[in-house]
Amino acid sequence: QVQLVESGGGLVQPGSSLRLSCLAPRGTLRRYAMGWFRQAPGEEREFVAGSKWNNIEYYADSVKGRFTISKDNAKNTIYLQMNNLVLGDTAVYFCAADSSWPMTVDGVDYWGKGTPVTVSS
Image 1 (tube, one colour):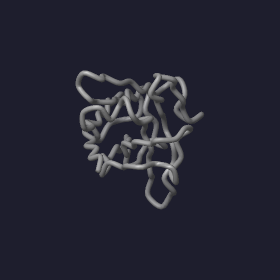
Image 2 (cartoon, rainbow, N blue to C red; image 1 turned 180 degrees about the vertical axis):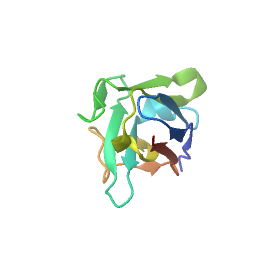
Image 3 (cartoon, rainbow, N blue to C red; image 1 turned 90 degrees about the vertical axis):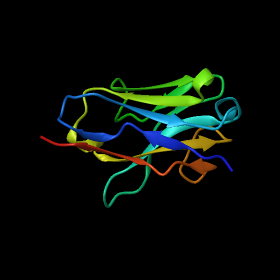
């Protein structure tokens, strides 16, 4: 069992930045593709950003140029830097570990419990 723990969510104004963190068990980042998904109220969960074990990155079109995924193997942590947040970014953000690529909702092996991000003026 791989336990993923997210942190860093909050309430921010449009145009602000937030950085989400996801702590994983030791070695997870080298064995799995790691990424972020989000689920807005009443919507389906969707892919946001992913990083393959060889550090190839992939982003949803809606966040490209605003969000950046990164990894710190020494800290067993992945991050999602979110800049220029807009109202449509409001959602619960989930950390995910996937043994396949590209990452899809149905293919994810392990999920975190999520951290809420609310963008509101």
